[in-house]
Length: 145
Image (cartoon, rainbow, N blue to C red; front, side, top):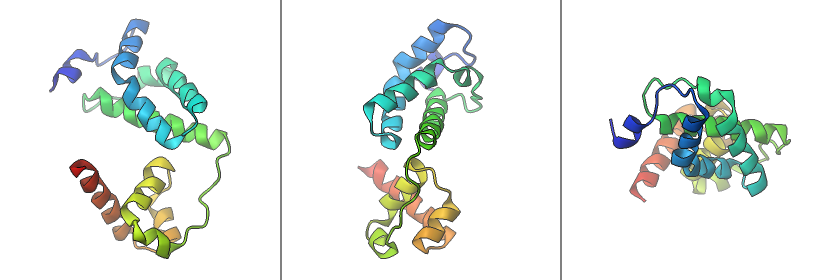
């Protein structure tokens, strides 16, 4: 367990603990939200919703890693906001053009756009295994960068 995890309460019961979480993890959450909602005003609204909602208080934290919990909640809230705002659905993508930079395209569709592995595979005319491999390849390339 690292220093961040030890300092994070497992159950958030006070507003000061929520504020401490905002101070500690706000920049991480904002970065995740901006990837999904690039408009600053909308991203800030989602940030406020994230750190003031009861979802944060009820969030299961089985791994003990609050950073992962915050990232998951930030992504979920951003995707919900994007759907509420009527963001365009998956537009037609040329499978051949997408294959030129497949790992990044698949990661974008999965993480930032919230599409299922099956929907991505169908849209890009790939197998599910190829989509999962592309996500794996992107993760490896991201870690090495």
